[in-house]
Image (tube, rainbow, N blue to C red):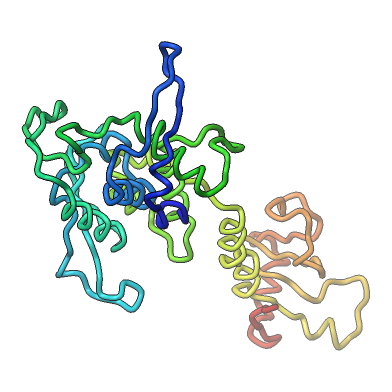
Length: 303
């Protein structure tokens, strides 16, 4: 991200030598203007698009959204990006960061006039955004040109633990980060933003961060909440008489009573039927315990 946001003319003027399938080597880099390379980098890093969608964006695809309610975080700026017909569905408009819209606008101002080109997906004659000298940007340039330039500037290898960094890496990374953010997108919101037809497809992109999963489980407080909502019956008569060997405290489980004194540490939770400390509600002893509720007192257990 740092490399894409700080791209300079020196970064793209160094030619990159890449091998071709025919055994020869080809030069890439230094051909496209700096404004185009900056816009291309920012779109790849922040827009969450497929490579086919990036190269088929059209002039005028980015626009400000005046109806958006400004917040301190948005600084009053919201942009929308018109994505053309894509792999699994129709065209869509998605919100993007202001830095993406501003980079696209800067390239459109510097973009020379060019004839329209044929879009094989829609059979239309359109003005491609990433086009130079009447030639649309090839999809292979993202992997063979842009990503090597950014990796070289950032000083990182082109491969990591997940494999070779490809044009699809940014899309999958953005999806996981939006899903695991402090105020995350829901699965269906992320589905709409990515342009998926089915949430099942979106699930392949999102990976639960272990920290988020642990935090969500802790905040749920399932066990503590159930303890706080559990009635505890105290047999005051048994306490005052000092009876030994007889239970004096009963936990109301709904379907029966548990007389185990250390109920919160019981390792056999949900297996009460065969436990010697369990009293089913149908038993006469359970009826006797319930009858004492009126005078023995009842309170909520809390930690």
